Length: 104
Image 1 (cartoon, rainbow, N blue to C red):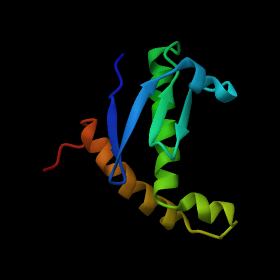
Image 2 (cartoon, helix red, strand yellow):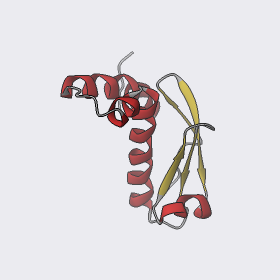
Image 3 (cartoon, one colour):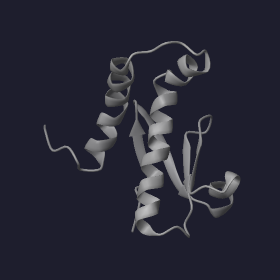
């Protein structure tokens, strides 16, 4: 199973790397480093787990990229529509690049 090397999230190019050390920082299958725009995936994880971990880290990146993390950290009340709109805007180019959306 081969993951993409780069992916655009919210208009920014993120690098995806395999790294057992970094992925295991918290005994997890992936890790997102916001300042460097890198997502690390455990190369020893089974293929489906790598895919799920990548999606999990992409969602973390979307939340950060859209500024939702600041709203959560400040314990702001935000609507479901705010979350869905923000995530859909950030995930659209990701899903397009991965071939899940075929529109022109």
